[in-house]
Amino acid sequence: MKEKLIGKIIHFYGQISVAIVELSTELKVGDEIHILGGNTDFNEVVESMQIEHQNVSRAKKGQTVGLKVKEKVHEDAKVYLAGK
Image (spheres, rainbow, N blue to C red):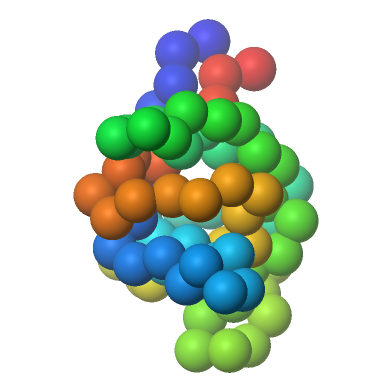
């Protein structure tokens, strides 16, 4: 299955390793994402997601979410829903 673009990184908080993602489609906890851009290229399962510092299990198109990530990411990196 082909990967689907679901958003982009608009900010990264290095101290806490949290990426702020502007979504162009729905995202759920448990989904596998692929972050690609600059020197960044890795897959990760979404284990926790927050909107306005509140934990959520899913987010809709147009929302901005904070995701804990395992590696440093850069602004404007693309976020894809990984193919299964």
